[in-house]
Image 1: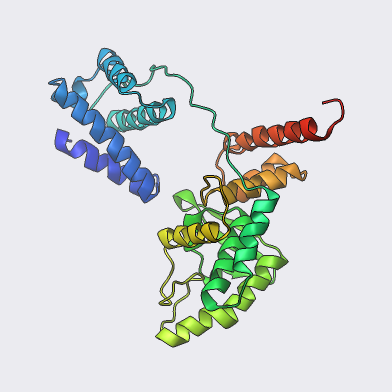
Image 2: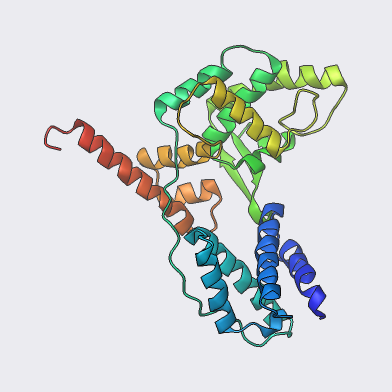
Length: 300
């Protein structure tokens, strides 16, 4: 394999064999491309000339440029995977990133909506029965009621919804599929939306397809479109603190754990490959318990 083929072949490997998402591929590409720029600045002509001392110099440069610990950890992980691929392809014998030690990632607790904030959001989507409001109602009930990712919501087809068992087939990261249950609130919201929202727009614009969520022209709603809808809901709710649509997923997990759900179940519902990804929410629930105790106990 020639040097100029290293990165394209690696990207093909991520896409075909690892089934990584477009966003993940972009992150890997940018990390490796930045490292290649650094090598050029150091007059190092090939990835195969990199050794442990070069890696340490690279980490020093990242530190001087004040990259966060999380960003550094991600770059190291990307480059370690890249060199592992080169070893597998027989163009390199040793991974210079194998024994690199770095500071642990910053522990950032997931932010979530409080009950009064969720009530304000739901008030927005239940204020009228216009077609797009009915769609926004489904979006909010769907993301909070199932904990799925925004990108997963954009992929839902009508055929994925099993009303008899109240479950939806979700296609997650790496094309992994899972069924998530849903309750009566989402069931009612979907039924009303299909009859008085989606069908109205589809017939108006003569567009017929299987996507659950549609835009105002009756085309499938994209991930970006869903985020835009959520941002507008949040703005209309007049919530004051800085918030993000992904907080609905965090709120879903936090509320389950606060109400006694076990970790394994939450892991499966969220579609986490590892339990360690779910355990971060235990820190949130512990903090919630502590705050409640300090606020309400007479001896706190």
